[in-house]
Image (cartoon, rainbow, N blue to C red; front, side, top):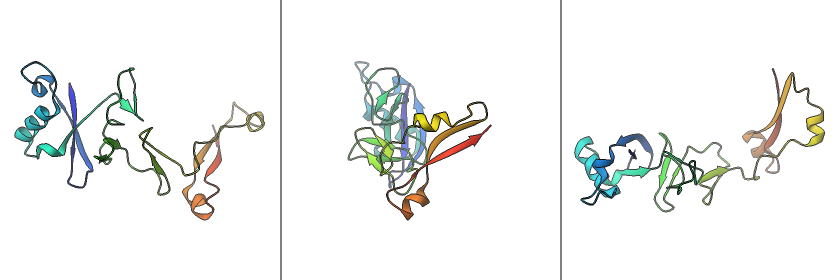
Length: 155
């Protein structure tokens, strides 16, 4: 089965549909995106160029079953299509986050989420609490050197 994203003129993903492989194959049995696009245009009254093939198995520019990543991410409703980089982007999680093209993912302007230190871990009662870092956009906007905030959850 082939998956195609229906996008708007503004490159917003409106829906994702599944197309039978036979409706995307040429006379040699090779899958061709253009054939799937033509099939979708004929059967859905939406321009062929606004149907973009996507891979169900691709996330953050990695193929979950070991195959070749395709177009960065599986398209999701509300996400966007970046034709220049050939990447489907999920919705931007925070105003300050930036695109990491190589990973096809959004990342904080301060980099990766910090890990819990051994000192912090030793202060946790694992039976009643959990700790982890969460992004606080308000904290980042107030001081661009902060943003990752240690969060404690009580069970």
